[in-house]
Length: 516
Image (cartoon, rainbow, N blue to C red; front, side, top):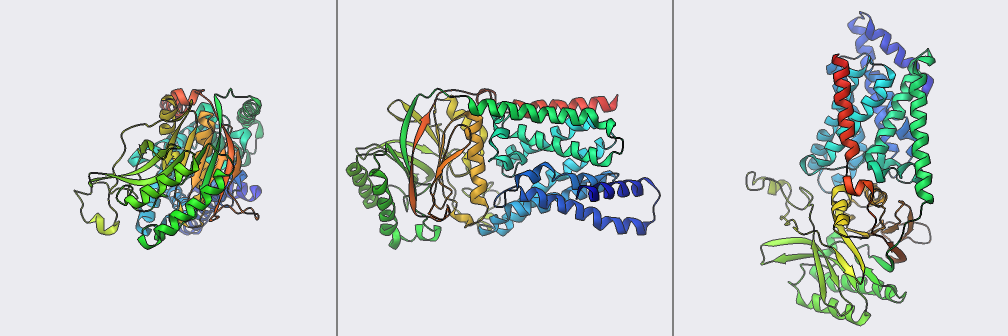
């Protein structure tokens, strides 16, 4: 494959450099886009469910060849098409909720690929060593903006594809996921330069520097994996995966069966002498406190179990404000503390600009939730933890804030039944893995339909809810594990995405050097 790409790159480059006929350009155009699409497919295969993670390290090379020698307009168009295909393959599952939303999201996210195509155009004739830092820096800054603009969505960042490769991802406690994305793009740039250059000595230092950075990363990873963490305590925690369909949750005639299903699984957990039982997001059917019989039944069950419970529920205040909440019940059946989801999902939990564009309620027929205002820290004895509800585990700064306020472990409760048995349920796990590594904290994931699991501070999934066949989706069962709590704060916890800002400085330096 690499020989074909190299040859194709040289042919395209030579044609682009001469005065070719319009016929030649028309013949080359489909091939250029095919290379871009091939690149998108390779990158998408690095993510769940296929998880051929190694493809991320070579997936950009076909795109680079397709961009060689193009003008600024062509560079943007080719890269934009690559983005359309990549994000369509990665986020196809959004159609289960809204096809229009999927289309808008893909067309928007593809712009980031288009902008990267422009960066490639401006750096095309630069020396390999400059490209080696400039292009990865651009990619990181674009991923950073995608994770923050318009509420942000960081899924499918290149670094996330390596979530099972523990020696590689340990640098996330310094750089976040962006450090791994940087290395992946650097590896792609180095490989492309090696394939397209006949005089290999010209890129000797670029190759040497890339190998050095990868070696340094792996060395740091091995050091961290062997490094012990001083624990402040340990707690046996049981997680419940009831696998209840979304459509059933709002049928009041089924509520007794739903709550009994949770009780049956919880009884199984209590028999294992657990210190805490956790239910998924919005696991309590209906609106909490509006159906008092549900509340009393739950409180009585918790009291009889003599065990604290963490429950996901929809709560309300004065019939005007509705919250996506997590409630901690004491072993006496009393609500000790409540966390209201801080970071809401646009068009999933609220409609932006509803009062200005009232017609949106017909396109996305949902009522608005209200955002929480308190970074809640739950306490059981001396051990403290915080809850990330649904996609909040993909918001890196929120986890950091919880830990700065005293959280010693993180819990993610979610309900991904919206997306059926798609890759979304596995992609969601990737975010929790990186929150664990970035902050060196245990993360407990409790998902209605899976994947429910325990993740240690090094990002390893140590245990999960699964059946005898190893399946983890739509399995009704529990899992119990001893979870380690700690109070350390990593460089990333304290300073956040400093690496992304360093990449921004690299871009500025590259622009200044080019002008001079």
